[in-house]
Image (tube, rainbow, N blue to C red):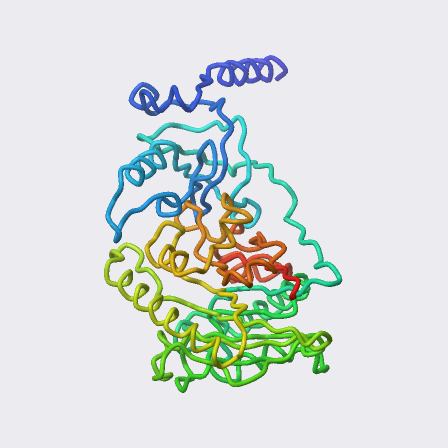
Length: 424
């Protein structure tokens, strides 16, 4: 019996020692050489994407090409093509037992051992051990700062079974509300400019019932639109700190057109000081994954033109030139709609404060879809801008499928954008 045990131990040791240690560069130079061979990668890797049965791994985070270069609907540039080719060459797909709720985008993987099945394809029957840093902590605003947050809250609807909520259960809705409330409280903001809130009163009132817990501290301003079963926008604000003045201003006269009316502005006044600012929450037309973006690109350009046409009217209505533009623009940094806003005199505050960060991850590539622009007078009053990483790094079905998870993480698919301001 003991003899058999030592024989098995020896064979096991030999099999481990037989695994060839290979760098990612060596592997990429000759995939055929390692075909069907179990290897151990000596190159540390980063999780760029987490899916049901696979992970996308690369030596460092991958960024969407349009975040760094002109491409797709705007016309491919040489740099764009280089980034596309570089992202593809650098990344590998690991098929594994993916414990999706523990593995996060940005996690580190060292000493990966797996079988090479094809170029850029590895296979292991085990779950992958990763190491990650603690979740990002968010500092409270300073005493004299006003905090404004732009947040896509991902299909927050009170009416289930309708548009965009066909697969949402009441239990998932309850969990989402709980997660969202925890996140909102943790942000310590005075004003939340929200995208993907159901139009009308039901969804905002459902959220405020949980956020207020019977008090009347928080109130809301919903977008001026007639269609009640669509994705909309909404402002939630701390009524002890700020108050809206004058009626909201829509970017479109026909407010029944939900895609156009999802851009609207509200003037807010600091109660204690009487100082004011204008905030516009904007949700531009979404991209179409896998179906090309040329048609939606044109619609986003139209959205941008309508927004720019609204802003002088906002200055006239609210009597102020301090304008803050927040929301989900569905455009990466180098795309034309973003650059058009910058050229129109609204500097990109994310590029000012944190140009190498991100707010969204799609198919393993990170970038900014959520934006913060400011008029020159407003920009002078901004002290800090940052994305808060509580969503995008977590598995994309983190909340919907793991009902036992009660944390605030992955309350939506986009990161909130935190803006701290000292009004003058």
